Image: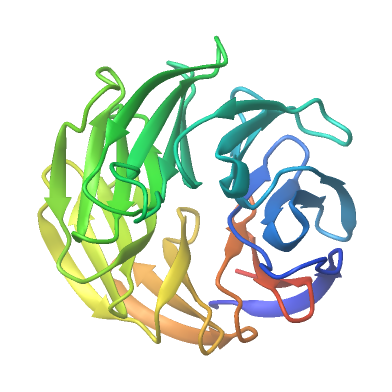
Length: 304
């Protein structure tokens, strides 16, 4: 079995352009938090229905959950801030100024370090950066220059390393959480436009979905290219399901999810979603994948 459509959850209608962006699950409640960019809000829902929204997050592009810290983080691109708040309705949101256009988020709970990958602005010199935020002190710890526009980012807890996709040049920047004021080194990616990124911590593999319709697999320790596979279009969000050993790659045009086995690496299926559906979320148990449908402002539910 790959993905079986079981239903839909209606989400708030869009108030402006922008649709949905990155999402993440909260294990304790089972709630999914999704960046609803069109509404400057993070929407929360459970396996059956929409629950509530956290408003006033201008241009929100990413939502990340730390189950260990019991915190939700948001990247608010239009106001150059990250938001920090507790799960549940009507939270008090702490906002911290970061670099230009925060997007990707990753978190080291042990060191209380939040990485915000900033897309920057070509008209602003030296604006392609990564901001390291100390969530204990609620303050910026470091601003790190990177060589180009950032995409998504993940944290490897075992190695204490952050990995950040850079669109051009096509590299993954590696930042050591023990020295969070510099780029430790960079891995070359064998296809243009590294975009979606996820990690299999058990096998130390990075899965990097690239704009050049290519899925690249790299060794997370050495950066060695382990293989490439074609995609059905230009990808965005990817999720690795460790329970199923499957990888899901969301592709907005034509509106599909490419499903791969990761042991061995091979394509299993292409599942149709909706044109423009470029982002997904995986339940904590790995038994459901949610695809966010911008035209009909719904989340499609797939049993994995």
